[in-house]
Every structure is written in structure tokens, then in C-alpha cells.
Length: 188
Image: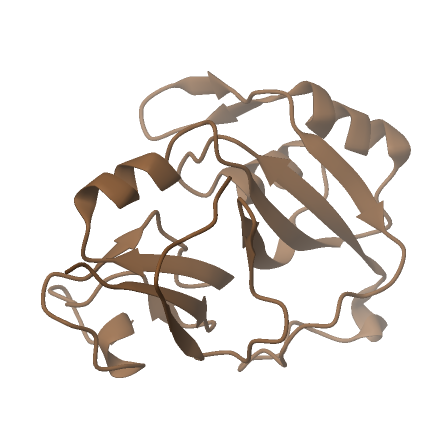
């Protein structure tokens, strides 16, 4: 019988269960997960939010497919323009490890209000350093640090990144580090 978990990954943790290189905070420190649990996709150490975990490799493959939407809230440096949002919507070239990649068109909108999210363990900065904006970006692909590279490419670097939705699964009303066991994932 396979097991499935929803996790609000806090800032400062890597999406792994073992840190081989140096002392990093790992997912196993947040909950007593069963042997064979794997994260579906990843969030880098500086990113937060929804992470799905499972003991079933077939479920992992289905969730990572391009048929499943992943929504992120990004706090960016500066007051983002409509022109910049349109560039993101249409897709832009970003550098992957070895080559350039043209991102697929995606849904992007500016959030008029700061989203209600758990406090981050480490503060970003305050308004003395200039204004910031929040945007919602919904993708069906997931290259390494893709959202951060996309916002940087249009001149609005990401200061805070939180994945808030995968398919129909959200982190609403979850606290940082909270884990919920579920019978299945509704990724639609």
C-alpha cells in the first residue's frame, strides 16, 4: 500500500532526504516519512511551498507531466510592468545548465495584494530598499530554477518564491513545515 503526503516546504530545506555534500536541512527532519518516500519534483533551498511526496513512482511520473499545472507566487524586485508580464506570458529564453531554453507560454498576473503566506524564516528585506511586486505564474514545465531565471531575464529578480498549487492541490491554510498524509493527489 503506497502512501502520499502534502508538505509546505519551508525556506532553507533541500528537497532530499539525505545531504551528502555538507550539512543541509533535509525533508526527513520535518516528519517521520516511510522508507522509499520521494519528492515529486523539487523546490530549491531558497524556495518554499507545496511539495508532494509519495512512495509510488507511477504517481510521481503522472504529477511531473506537462498536463499538470504548477502555480507559483513570486515576490519580485521593483514594480513589475504590464510589458514585463506579457513577456513572461509569451515565453522567454532562459539559460539551462548547458543550453538556452525557450519557456512555454504560461499564465501570469500581478497580485494586487500581498498573499497570505507563513512568515519566512529569514526576512527578505524591507521597503527602505525599494518597492516589490507579487505575481502569480502558472507553468506546465519545470526547468531548474525556471521561475527565478524568467523573472531575472525581464529585469525583475525574484526575492521570494512560493509554490502554491499543483493541479488542484494547494497549500492554503498550511503552515511552513506542516505535513498532511492523504489517500491520493487530486492533480486533475
